[in-house]
Length: 524
Image 1: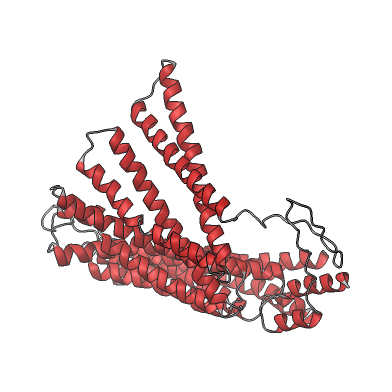
Image 2: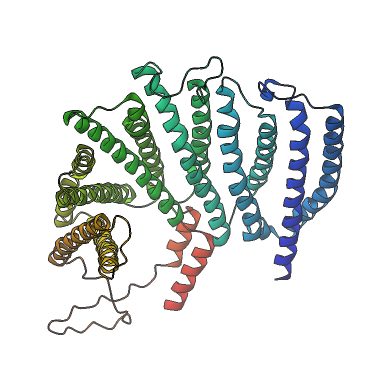
């Protein structure tokens, strides 16, 4: 306990000094960068007093950070020399990884949206201050990453912090990439399809508005974020197939599937509007129906995470088959969500006849987008019947996902409908309560249909059986009682040699190996 407190103190002071030095570097760079084109069209040159003040602060901050930070870093290195286990400790992993998790996405996002995109303005603002902050933060991230790479996380908690950093930062960068990619494709579609007239912004000249960015700066900002997003995948390439890695990458893969489905829905809705004779302006196409942006980004995200999942699956027996099944479940579940959401909107339009063509286009587009889930549903059912390894778990996961969605839709929809009707009956209706009540009723009906259909399928396919098992002692046969399912005996842990083989292969951590060895010894 005392050693852990000592290490906590060392890393706290060391990290504080690094941040102090980064602040000093940022203040020094700001007036220097103000002499470059980063000052923009209206920025003023810094005065001599500002340059002197920032230079003095830089010198003082680096002197103090160098003395105190260097001393504590020396103490850290000495502690690691005296106790080699501290190099892979959870405290070291926490400070290095969490600090980098917070700093890296902020610096990358500020660089993309605050500096690179702003350089594309016709009358560019002064971005020298933001550029100085970005450079200082990236320098801090570089030092943290260099120090993190010097050692290897060994304990289970240290590995958790490391994976939280790698996959958490990558997930944040994915969310930063989405708006940058959409903005870029909005400008591309406007330039290619509408000759630059679809943005709805008056060209520059005199005292009229100017376009916010140009294609070149948007492409550079998008590429900047994408490179770091891919870079985190490259850094994590040697990680074992941990649960946290699989969860993060499957969630991100689902992001990609959702983007593809959204793009398909937008394209179908645009086609239906044209079929119904509804005119759509170029500005509306770019702002609301630019399906190319979502389709392209979704395919890139799906492809990248499919490759990373394939790489992780090689570390497990039948890993790629399991990965494919889980991917099918994710695609089928999201398509089913789109289908039933569209069915609910169709039913709502029938309740509120006559509905507008826009409403019918939105509802039918969702139904058409998700209707192919039925084929995936049948495919998973057939795989289950063929006893394909892992197929029963995949089928069970898909059915349970729909059951969960049906329960939520029925519960929330029923509550909303009851609330609207009861408040109106008591003489205190809110604005638009009839539409709200019908919407809640539709959600309840669709959720109830999902529950009835998939409860029947789950019971027919015996998907609830085998989920709960009582442990029985090894060597004691399970008794058979008419009408009662026979419980399977608990399987004893494997041998110590098998555990050591998995540890040397990097499939499990040191703590996991120790726990399994204790189980083997305790079982014997």
